Structure formats: structure tokens, C-alpha cells
Length: 215
Image 1 (cartoon, rainbow, N blue to C red):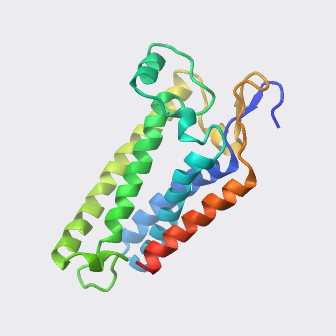
Image 2 (spheres, rainbow, N blue to C red):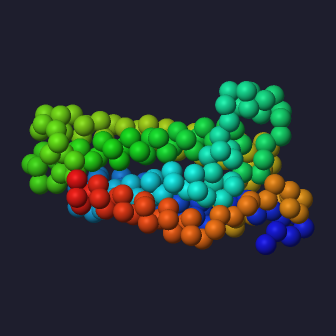
């Protein structure tokens, strides 16, 4: 609950998605580098499910999780850059970071779905829809696209440090606790009912299983 000087800003699903991605990205890199491809594919399926869930939660979730609650157009972005006050959730620049990372991870997973190793022992679930030559090309793209994700991670970490050291705004702790400093009730998160979480989680898990198992 929100108390004096503390405002609830992030729900548990958003925080779990964030920290799961923090763990999965290096784990997927490590499995690829050490040729543990079967495990790499399994982690990719989990990441696909997470991305699908976050997209659905961006439509069905709590007020600060919904894209409509934090994604702004050019006017809102420029207003923020000129000093307009942002809400307690993602600011307009942070929203761009969220969208960019989700898009980059979606592209990476999408490329992996069509990838195949040199011997054809491990193949993405959709690789049989394309030729061997195309699968090889997409495998190369899958490997090089990871550098785009690394660049976005570097920008994300730089932004966290900037807000911490320059603006004296700790963005990490709220993503752990779910709360941040503020007047009681000011812009507090409006939680989504639990059935929406079950719906989003079920659809995401079903979608990931369908793509990896049935298509």
C-alpha cells in the first residue's frame, strides 16, 4: 500500500518481466557462445513467452504498465525535454527505450525462429519454411543483431547512471520494490485485476508453445 512519501508505481508482473530479461539475455549469450544450443533454444522459447506477455500486459495491465499510460508522441517527448513534468512511471524518453528493447528482442527471437546451425542438428521451429541458404543468412543476422541489443543495454545503463548521479533519481530501487518517493496517492499505479494477468500469461504461454511446438 502507498504510505506517506511512497507511491506504488510498478506492479509485480512488470518487475518480474524486467528482471527475467536481465537474467535471460546473458544466459542466452552464454549458451550460444558455449554451443549449448538445445538450452539456448529453450531459453529463447521462454524469452518469446515473456515478450508476448509484456505486449499483452501493455494492453491489459496496470495503469503504469499499459502503453497508453506512458507512450507519447513527438509533442509529448519535446514537452518533456523542455521541462514538462512526467508521471511516476516511464517518462517519454524511457518509453522509447522500452519500445526499442521490446522491438529488438522481438527481432532477435524472430530471427532465431528461422535459424539453423551448420550441421542442421539444431533448427529454429520455423526454419523449414525457408531454404537452407536463407536459414544460414538469418542465422548470421541472429548473431550480429545481438550487438544492437548490447547497444540498447549500454544506453539503458547510461541513462540509469545519468538519472542517479545527475538528477538524483534512483530508477533501480522502484523496479525492485515497486514503489518510489512521492506524495501519498500522487499518480499511484492503478492495479489490473488478477484475471487479466491470468489471461495475458495464458495467451503468452500458449503462443510460445504453439510457435515452438506446432508450427
